[in-house]
Each structure stands twice: as C-alpha cells, then as structure tokens.
Image (tube, rainbow, N blue to C red; front, side, top):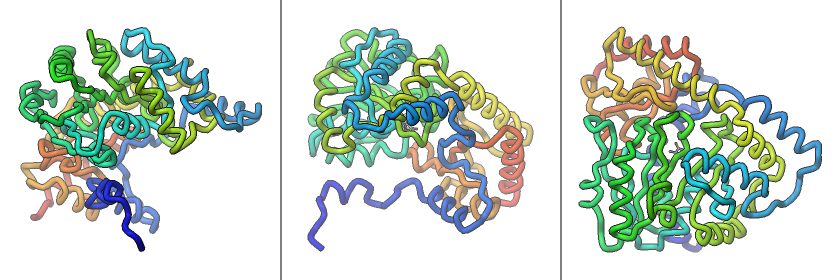
Length: 390
Ligand SMILES: Cc1ncc(COP(=O)(O)O)c(C=O)c1O
C-alpha cells in the first residue's frame, strides 16, 4: 500500500486515545455482558417526542433533498436566534454555519484558523477530542491545566506563560466537560484581553450552555471579541439529540464563507428533514429545561449518596452531565481504577487521565442512568473501594 498522509496518520497516534475503557465496555456489551454505561455523555432517554414528530412530518412533507450548504434558512435563523439569546449579542445568519454536531463545528473551526505548524493552547481538563482535532489541522498544542483549588477555572497567567511565537488560538470550554466548571465573566475577560493583545483567535466550546442557566457567559459578547471568537454549539446535549448530529459554529462571516467551502467538499450540508426538525426544536426549546433539570437532580442524588458513605470524594458541584471523583486515596492511577471497576462491578467510567494531567487519579461518571440506579452505582463503588487491592 502507498503511504497515507502524515496529517491523517497522526490525528490519534495511540488509536482511540482516552476512550479505551469505553470501547472495551461497548465490546463487552455486544458480547452480552450487562454493563452500566457511565463512560460517555449520551442520554439514556429518547429525543423529546415533539422533535421526533417534527422530523416525521418533514419526511412526510417531502424534505428529502440537498440543502443550502451553510444550512437551511429556517435552521440558520433558529441558530442565530438562540445564539443571540445565549450571548446577549444580536447575531445574524451570516455568522452561523450548521455542522455535523459540535464535533463538526470544532473540526471546521480549527481547519479554518490553523495552518500546519501553528500552535493552539488548550485549556485542560478538556474534552477528549480536542488534541486530536488540533492534530487533524496539523497544529501543535499545549495543554494548560486548571486545578480543583481554583474551581477548575484557568489562570490567565498560566495561559500567557504557554504562548509561543506561532500561537494562533486558545481553546476553552465552559460549562466544562468533564468538570462542569462555569468560568466567570472575569476569567473570560482576562482570556479575551490576552487574545486581543496577542491577536489570537478564541475558540469557545459552549455545548453545555443550557445546563448552567444564568451562570453561562459567552466571551464572544465581550468588546472586540466578536471578530476573533468561534463559538462551538450543538443540539446533542441541550435538546437530547446526540444521534442526530446537528451543531453549529458562530464566527465572523468571512470564516463562515470559508467553512461553507469546507462543507462543500466534505459533507455537502446536513440532511434536509433533520434540519427542519432541529429548527423547530431550537425555536420551541423542546426538552431543554427538562433535560437540564434531570441531570441536575441526578448529580445531586449521586453526590448525596457518595457523601453518605464517604468512600470517594466528588470534586465538582453537580452542574451539567458529569461528576468527577478523586480516587487518589485508593490509587494514583485513574485508569487502573476504571479498568478494575469495569472488571469487578461491570461499571464503565472514564479515567480522569483522558481529560488531562490535573485529573490524574480521578474518574468521570456520566449521569446517564436514572437517579435510583445512580444510588446503586454509589453503593457498588463504595463496595469496590472497600475491597480495592493494588
Ligand atoms: C465539550 C464538548 N464539545 C463537543 C462535543 C461534541 O458534541 P456533538 O456530540 O454534538 O458532536 C462534546 C460531546 O460530548 C463535548 O463534551
């Protein structure tokens, strides 16, 4: 076989980096083992039925065709409207491009602003795909850690210290996966000041906006940031639509035009009927409040159950879809903990190491089973910890 491109070969050098426990759990499930799957942020409930009905109606009405590559006009309008609402900044459709989920927005955004050899700073703990998405653009990256004692908010001085001559962008994620940290306006302002001073792009991943309520802040709304911020968004979490693959990027119109060309040569736009259903779901807010309330209640239930037994310490307040446990009293290695938990209790969680150094010796639990099952999970984890042998 002739050689593959060097860029594609190094997207994920260790193949599925960080996802190993999850992929093994999926395999065991396929072989018939009963696994409690708490490793990824996928809902255990269906998409709200009005969204499903809107999709069926769109199919019945014949929305089966190629669409405008930027997005069908109704969808772009709905995305612009919700962006205005989230950010407080009047946003127009020429600043929006519909993408295949939030991941499609991340990919397109990085392709649009990074050349091979450019450098991007990724604030960590970070969503698992961030490094690979930078590598897919041929870029180098530096992870800048945020720590539990600062509520997992990054320090601008640490970001400044990591800047290089070829740094082009900073990537942040608030509300954060995995820590659920919601960065304050002040933290955003300090990062924005750096971007302006050093003429950098800011990529702001806001896919969990609906779960932070009033606390969510979009840095694109800060002075002089509209022209240098790319906001990643998605209906996956907020609207219970992970499998529909609908997201969007908000960016200056020139960037949007470039990404339309990228989509022309990659996906040629989103499916027609899905776009119609997504537009209605966004406009009507189907499921948004209920989903946020469900995860908040689940997070509180799990934290309460763990506090009662006092066997491992949750390090974050219930926020979006995750609870992170500090397991260092048991083992310094979150991967070892996660593998053993899978083997001994058939519970799949994500090792903290998948999200960056400051979560070494931690694990992340996705709140993707009902409350009563989470109480059983807490009991099993405590039994597991009590019997833990290195
Ligand atoms: C922070 C963050 N960004 C982006 C994504 C990707 O979202 P989507 O499923 O819409 O592609 C996820 C998914 O878990 C995420 O947690």
